[in-house]
Amino acid sequence: MDKKIGKSRILDNKVLWAVVSLLASILLWVYVTTSEGDVIERTYDGVQVVFKGEENLLEKSGLVISNISSETVNVRLKTTRREIAKLSASNITAVVDVSKFNSEGIYNQSVSIEFPSGSNTNSIDIVTVNPGSISFNIDKTSTKTIDLKGRFVGTVADGFAAQPIRFDPQTVTITGPKNEIDMVAYGWVEVDRENADKTIQFASPYVLMDENGNELEIKNITLSDETVSVTVPITSTKEVPITVDLVEGGGATSENVKITCEPSTITIAGDAETLEGINKISVGTIDLASFASTFEDSYKLVLDNSVTNVTGITEVKVTVQVVGLETKKFNVTNISTVNGPAGRKISVVTENIEVTLRGESTVLSKVQANNIRVVADLTDIGSTTGVFQPPAKVYVDGYTGVGAIGEYSVYVKIK
Image 1 (cartoon, rainbow, N blue to C red):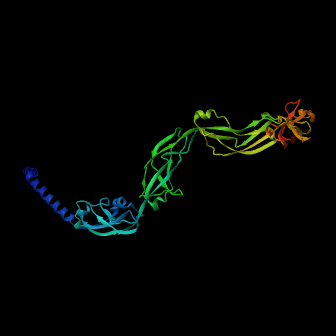
Image 2: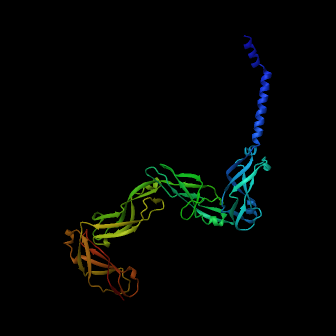
Image 3: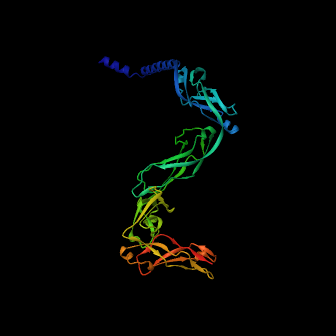
C-alpha cells in the first residue's frame, strides 16, 4: 500500500515534469542546430531565366529579345540545411544582363544566379549551372496586321445551318521581332457547340498560325487585342427544287415538255420568314420555240443575298425535252413586211423560205403552205436605204396548237 502511494506522488510531482521537459527541449535544440549546420548539395530544375534591362532595351532603342536558347536552367547548390530549406526553383532566378546592349545582333551571355531576400549568400556555393550561358537575338520591333479566320466544328439542330464565322474586329495588329512576326499568317478560332439552334456569340482568344496552318508558340509577340468578338450565325434551312422558266412557243407549252435538272434540289439557309416565301429556284429562261425536240445547257446557280447556298453547288445541268409533238417543214412564199419607213420603196428580195412547224400530228397534217405567212418587221431599219436582213415572224392562219421553231429572217431592199 505504501509503495503505491509513493509511486503516485512521484507521477504527480510538477517540478519533476518541468525538469524533464526542459531537458527534452535542450536536446531537440542541440540536434536541430547541429543538423541545420550540415552542408549538403541539392539540384533545382527549371529555374526561370530573366533578362535584366529588357524593358529599357525596348523603351530606349526599340529592340526586343527573341530566339532564346533556353527559358530555364538547372542549378546545383551546396549550402547548409538551414539555407536549403529557404530555397526553391521558384524563388531562385537565373539572370542574363542585357542592360548594356543597344544594337541588333546574335549574342551569348553568361547566367548569374540570384537568391531570395534573407538568404545567407556567403554560405551558398553554386556548384553548376546548366546551361551556363544563354544565346539570344536582339531585333528591331516590327508591326503587322493579320486577318482572323475560324471554323465551326460542332453540330446544329435539325433544320438549321451554321454560317461563316464573323469577327469584330476583323483584323488584329501584332508587334514583336520581325523574324517572328513574319512567320505569322493569320489568327485562328475554332467554335465547338453541340446541337446549336440559335446564333452563337462570345468573346474568344485566338491562336497565331503560319501559312501552312500550323499553330505558332511565340512568346515575344504583343497583340493589339487579346480577345475578339466571335459570331456564328445559325440560320434555318430549306430544301427547294431547281427549275427553269419557259417561254411557250413553236406549238409547245409547259404541258408538252419534260424538264430535268441535275441536281434537282438545293438546300438554302436564311431567315425563317424569307425561306417561307421561296418554293423553287429558277436558273434561267428557255424559249420553247428555239429548239425542235431536245435542249441541253448548263447554268450558273445565282442566289439572292438574303439566302445562303448550303449545298455548295454552283452549276446546274438542264435538259428540256418536247414530248407528244411532231415537226414538219414547209416552203413558204407568202413573205411581207410591216413598219417600213415612210417615203421609201420596199421590195422583198427573198422569194422562198423553209419554215419548220411543230404541233400535234393531227393538226400538222391539215396545215398547207398557203396557210403560213412570214412577216419581217422593219422597225429597227430606220429611214436608211439599201439591202437589209431584218428578223421575221411566222404566222399560221386558221390553226391553233402549232407554231414555228427556230429564228427566221428575210432580205429586203429599201430605196
